[in-house]
Amino acid sequence: MSVSYRQPGVVLTDRHFTVPLDHDDPSGETIELYAREVVAGDKAQWDLPWLVYLQGGPGFGANRFIGKQAWLGRALKEYRVLLLDQRGTGNSTPASRQTLPLRGGPREQADYLAHFRADSIVRDCETIRPAVTGGAPWTVLGQSFGGFCTVHYLSTAPEGLSTALITGGLPSLDAHADDVYRAAYPRIERKVAAHYRRYPQDVERARQIAEYLLRYEPVLNGGYRLTVEAFQSLGILLGGGEGSHRLHYLLEHAFVRTPQGPALSDAFQEDVRSVLSYAGHPLYALVHEACYGQGDRPTAWSAERVRAEFPQFDAAKALTGDGPVLFTGESVHPWTFDCDPALRPLRATADLLAERDDWAPLYDPVRLAANEVPVAAAVYHDDMYVDTEHALRTARGIRGLRTWVTDEFEHDGVRAGGPRVLDRLIALARDEI
Image (cartoon, rainbow, N blue to C red; front, side):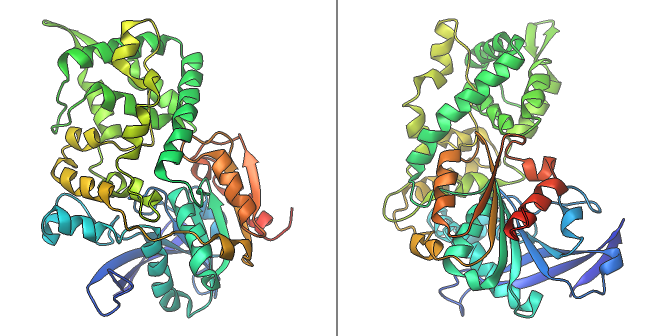
């Protein structure tokens, strides 16, 4: 049953759908999807075209906006918006350490999670679209991983789309996860160098924290094991527009004096836990590398293997000299599951996904080269999360795609830039600029 309610300036409706777990077996097991319909209050009775939003991640539910926040205000000027919780996220049959044991052991869990990639998400969209739009094509707005889903949409079901808008989410069409991370580590190193130029005092602070962690390896509230590698992964903040400042403010209150000597402050530990914990989005860690899987080559903990090719990221070695401790980010490692109590019971499941060698192709270069759907993409210059060179190569492979390459925003530009970013993409897709 659909329930409607109001927030300032908008009418919201909860929508629920039933879809196959495996779309190749439509008569088999089903899962439930949740989406929130949003329409401007003064247009609630209008017959408007639809825009479906695909969140970044993987593993995050759709934004929980209040009123017309961020890009939503621009979209509501002409669209009825569907904020979809992709399968396994939010209220859409969530996948976590609490729910996955219902599937059985690690093997059964891994087989289940193999159905939680872009291909299944797009087929979910096509399954629910007739019920939402009456069969009419809709506009898709894909942020980050949502952009990966959008490119898969263009590859497999372009008839369902009237327009495709992508923000920070043009994937490589053929790169293995190893190629993705070989491109990522130098990019991350540049972001760290820029952070240290802005906040040179953080070089010594990070070294002091790393030395402390190598000696004591504290366990935070809730059971999170703060290893030096986990501390380095705070670099995930550096991919956002305000991330460098957030990291600086986090580091500046790391230590307090106690009767036993200097110790990590409770405030620092709590801030670190809130950034590093996957309790709210465990699917991100579980299927992050699987989202790059295509063909018979396993991902095999790619980020961890490739990291060994960049010894400058070894904190212990950095501390033997006077070099900076480098942060990392946008990567999941085996030790991520050992550190985080929200992931620890799922380590064997993650290992099985890393070994999997039967991934279906995600993109169709031939079909993309013949694309007829209007497409516009924001490409953020030196985006920490998505390689710009990979993105532009893909853009050239999609017929008719128009890009807006900008260094005004980081990866979260659609949030930070809000209406302006979406307005620019809509105009590009319509060939108005």
